[in-house]
Length: 109
View 1 (cartoon, rainbow, N blue to C red):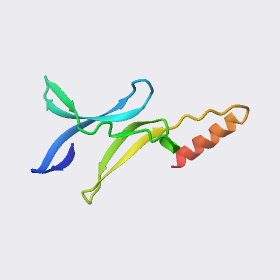
View 2 (cartoon, rainbow, N blue to C red):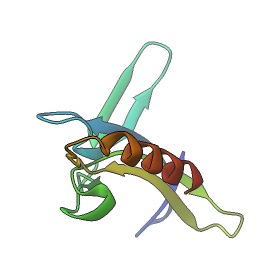
View 3 (spheres, rainbow, N blue to C red):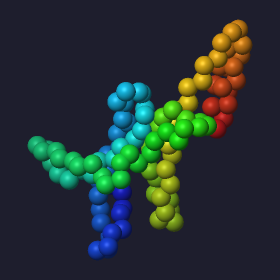
């Protein structure tokens, strides 16, 4: 459950994050507020500002964003871990060496 502060004070909302795979894997992440959740019913609505994260057109998330994991800090502030990617095409025998280097770099970051 994410704490949201609105014009009428503190609000509690449940937000479900989804990966948008239309046309391309992990194009962007959308958010939906769960408005009804019981053992027999479920309703949700898209939040106002969607997508909440998407590709930026360059660097590590050039082609897409596929995950968000918000975390509340002890200070009460929120941070989020996100996942994104870029597609790089490499030709030739050096591909295997490049893949090994990228795997090592990704494991240490």
